[in-house]
Length: 222
Image 1 (cartoon, rainbow, N blue to C red):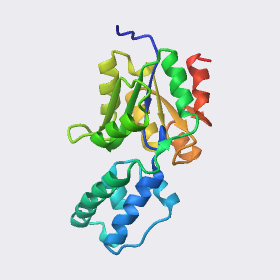
Image 2 (cartoon, rainbow, N blue to C red; image 1 turned 90 degrees about the vertical axis):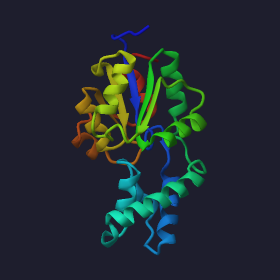
Image 3 (spheres, helix red, strand yellow; image 1 turned 135 degrees about the vertical axis):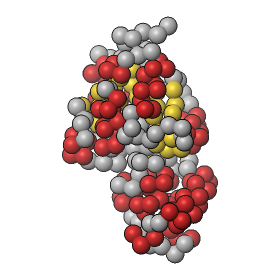
Image 4 (spheres, one colour; image 1 turned 180 degrees about the vertical axis):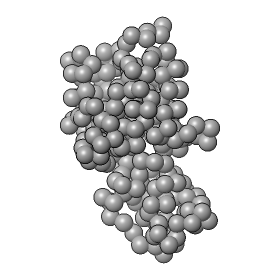
């Protein structure tokens, strides 16, 4: 039964639930090496990711190569490479399993909204987060604008029958915080992901979490 008064949670995936950075960096560097472009250090990828795979590819390419033809060609190669190695190093962040246990035990509806392609999002959740029930898992689709457009977040709220203002939206980038603000959800920035506290606050975070368990006090859970 739908209960519009209960709180709910929307999670970003990469940089929030799962540490995907190594597999993304390794995959993109393999593409860059294949086409003779300079590689990047792991830390640089924290600022390449977050807005979809097409933007990751564009940002990783040398500025002189950022034209539609090269981006399209490298995007296809990136999809192939990431498809081969996406689960080699990717794991939930420390404290995430315990947080999900507590939220599930408290009856909090859990959902995921990612700019990762939808099929890859569903596959990652099924393999790496199989113990928990996520009511909705939504990745990037051609029919749905990517974050920071609030459309995906609002689709989730409508499907669950819970007003947007009852949602806590957890993410690690400014894009996530903008999405939450535009959707009318509570923007919760996490510091274990890819970006800084300053970026999160500048983009509207009203809550900052140092560690996953810190969320529980806002939901009146132990």
